[in-house]
Length: 403
Image (cartoon, rainbow, N blue to C red; front, side, top):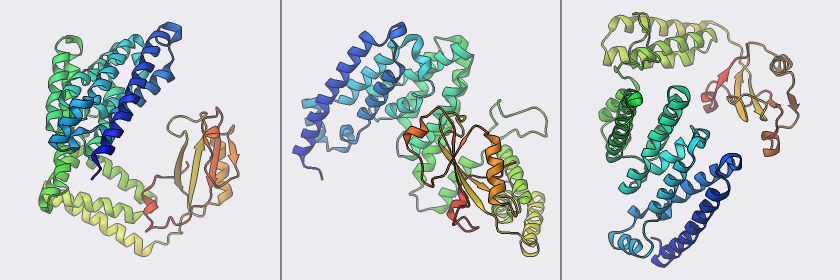
């Protein structure tokens, strides 16, 4: 239990800090907003600082007793509301510069709106619609926003944030905003239904994780991972040969993955996925014909494990550092699975041939920010990786073969 005096001291410091943030905001509005004076990095830093301030543990008043809550509220007010309203006002002042912060600010704004304070939520959720409208006016859709919020929502709910009240408020506010913009209302309605369905499943899943009933947990997990709902139009195509539901889509992807595992002679991994499919066929959809085919496939994989000689593969860790790499590689490390009997020199030669202008790093430790932020390309290749055998946890990392 934190002493009351210490809590009040911390809140006093936060109050001083809040005044400083608001003073910075005034200066930014006056000197760094209009036309050529606009400074993206400065505004970006402000938003991230303000969100970090509003989400800090010491300001989450719900954790205190009712008496302490009222005492803090009377003395300091709810600083979350004050900074939240300021973030909202600063956002709307951006004008045409808003597009620079989409989708980068979607996650921080989502984190702020999930704070369980009703007035704060009502004031800040409309920022989402403004983001959607802004991207729609620029590109004809708001896919960047949609993809980002779905990705972040999963993470936030898993971390314990979000509730049914938030889901209902999000739906009502976005639909109310959409009613005033007929050109985008249908797209917004589809988005709201998508997010609402996802949020319902995530909240259910989170709720049953502490449930003692394994059946409840399994039922909820199946509902989340294997859904018979129709796929979104972006992934659904006409014709019977294409997946029409989430279950069919996932089954198709599993079949493709199993095929790749078979091709790479990783039959243990293929069997693991086969067993997941078998459980669906036997316990969920009762398709015994597919189940029999699945078991025959598993039997083949077990036979391959026993009869076919497989050389132990080497694994290579490769880091791509520098701003010269595309975003999906930049400053990331990947684990590559070598081909059969592939020599270290051959792997390195093939790797460097894909990036002829890249500089090969001779060190074994990760580089500093000076290399990561530099405009060039630097490749750190650790050959081979140790401890990446068939039973290693690291086998859950990204395994790719250079083609």
